[in-house]
Amino acid sequence: MRRLALPHLFGFSLLALALGACQAIAGIEERKLDPSLAVPPDSKQCKDYCSAVLQNCVGDNAVYNDLAGCLGFCAYLEPGDPVEPDPNTVACRAREAGFAKLEPDSHCKAAGPGGNDVCGSDCEAYCQVYPRVCPDDYLYPNEKACLKACSGLTDQDSFDVTRDHDGDSIECRLVHTVSSTTLPGTHCAHAPIPPAQPWCAGKPSGAPTCPEYCKIVMAACDGELTQYESPEQCLAVCEALEIGTNDDQAGNTVGCRRYHAFSSTLAPTTHCFHSGPTGDGHCGQDDASTGDTSNCESYCRLVEAACPDEFAAGPGSAAECMQTCSELPEAKADSKYAVESAESSTGLSCRVLYAARAFEDKTACASALGGDLCD
Image (cartoon, rainbow, N blue to C red):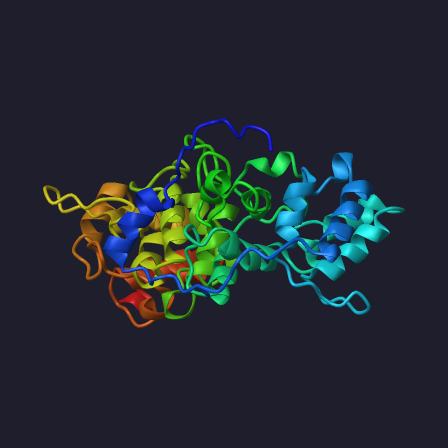
């Protein structure tokens, strides 16, 4: 694979950096892997499949760089029944590779590592193969947890073995998972689910997007930890916040919240509160000298954006909003905002919930400013 000689640059989630810190601070569960897993030998089925897919899927339709990577990845897939192939099996991919001889544009992606939702999904393939190839870099206790976290990744609905060598997508992680089957020491560290520099992550100084943030926070934080009632609500809140950069781990930005959303896939009861609309004092910082809090900074920004006319009538300014807000219950860091608990709050959490709702329903503005249901 190209660019193998470049040095490793590690992102926030690699084990040597933030994962180690998160494990120490957040109590991430120890991984549970089957110690009996071992590299299976090349099979005739894999050799036949790889011969077909490498012959029929070339150029823009190529799904593997070379025979070694194809055989390596194939070895970790379930063989399946060639007569009635189930999804996410070698047999299904081999069938598609055969069809690709006549219709490569229609069948090569399904014949490739991710299966293109014909032979399983990208996440199913990743969560089956990556933990076996890269057990020391795999972060999750079981396949269910892996699939849940993976569902929060950007899915490009395409697969290009050259283009997807980098980029914060599941496709990039699959490219490096394939390469890990032959060069695990080089590529395993590139392919965990939390973004990993230098390849499967956004540029450190670049900005995350609201769809990227909302997809991972909605996937990671559910049930009593839910931070948003819908993707639309999340997107509206996100667009009112400062975006920041992809490498933010602090500061009242979307970038910081996205960092904590990925951490939430490992330790949700710790990090979901930090990844939501308030940042909960971990994305932003309280100022003891003034009494201002980052939860209030987030709230005032949101309520002004969602309810501009009502905000202008009172409190009228960010400074006045901050002063009033700082006296409320749940204004300080670690107040643990979540939709479920905010429903029964009469403090700041209630106002934040209704400010988020007000982006789509202006009747929520009265409560968002401390009246009605938040009085």
